[in-house]
Amino acid sequence: MSLLNLNLSAKDVAAEVSSGDAIFYIGAGFSMVAGMPGWGTLLDELISELEVIGKALPIAGRTDLSGLVEAARAAKSVGDYQYVASLLSMHLPPDTIKSHVQSRFSIATGLSPSTQSRVNLRLDSLMRAPVSGVITTNYDNLIESHPKFLDRFTTVALSGVDLPSLFRGRDRTGRYFLKIHGDLNGDIVLSSEDYDRVYLSSPKAENFLRASLMQSPLVFLGCSVEDAILRQRRLLFELYGSGLPPCFQVTARSNTSEVRAAWLYEYAGIQSVFYDASSSEHLEFDPFLEDLTAEMVRRNLQMFGRRPSRIIRQSLGGPLEITEAALGKTNFEILSMVANSSDGQCTYLQLLEAVLHKFPVLEMETMVYRIAFLVSIGALRELPGEELLLAVSDVSSYGAM
Image 1 (cartoon, rainbow, N blue to C red):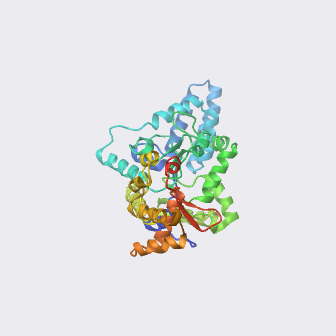
Image 2: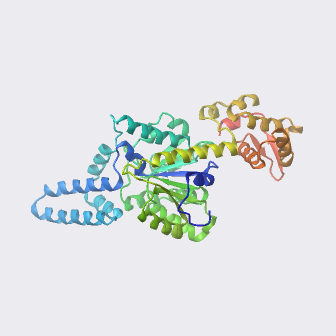
Image 3: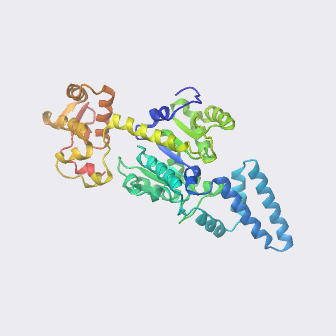
């Protein structure tokens, strides 16, 4: 997409992010449906904590702290959340912040049936999305509570410090989950200073974020584009322009958000996608997310065929015949064509001709994607320096990826 478009649909976004390498970037708005506070509400509550501490001080100290409380509330009223977070981090005891965050972001019980249904729909939509990873700023464990979480995400990092774990033992068909602002049971990132301490002081962390922006389509859900990520995207946008992967922000439509959309597009090449929020509860977000992920799944299956489950990926190691269960019938047929060729190898052109002859109703583009998928998971191997494909008859190496 080369032009600003304020009327993009879920299908329009899916057309750009369905190849399996996209990243979902999830913010506080995603968890608010389950009773978690938003960023602004959390800051208000922490300002109140600071006020309580001030009232317990002697008169001289109380005056100084009341001035800080007034400054924080004034900055909050004009939307300067990062400044407020910095003030709170400087003047609230870390244990007070941590205790408050733990109490407010514990998963609520006793939700109404309609609210629980919304939570389930939101999580189910997220779990089925064919993405390479999910990055979240949320402290809570709502996403991890889904029964399919461990099947969907093969690598988990609960803070920026854990980033190296994303690169150790990660298989190519797995997805990663990164809590970029920390976890309830560990350190948390509240202010810009905390963020810079965790990420910008670590070359691995900074390079990971930059590489993600350079290599993967990005979709922001339940959040605005935060300053730290926006700065990285802006820098890369100045260097590479439209050569960067597409980036989308899903947000409620309003006059303010439409003005910001034009700025985000000009400033960093970020397209805004609107849903019509006629209620304060943002009920329209859920069907939008459901439509988006359903269309992503449909397009991904059209391109690559069935995605092997984690259990099958881990258990592969027997003869070639068992891979039909993992890969799906069509992909297995393609693999068998190569295996049954002379010396178990053939050229791309030979394989495409054979596949299109056997499956004349399927499009050329779909076949190319399926072959690329088999190469990416190691079921087919490209011979260096030649336009040849070799079938891997012993799939134990695939199971170990």
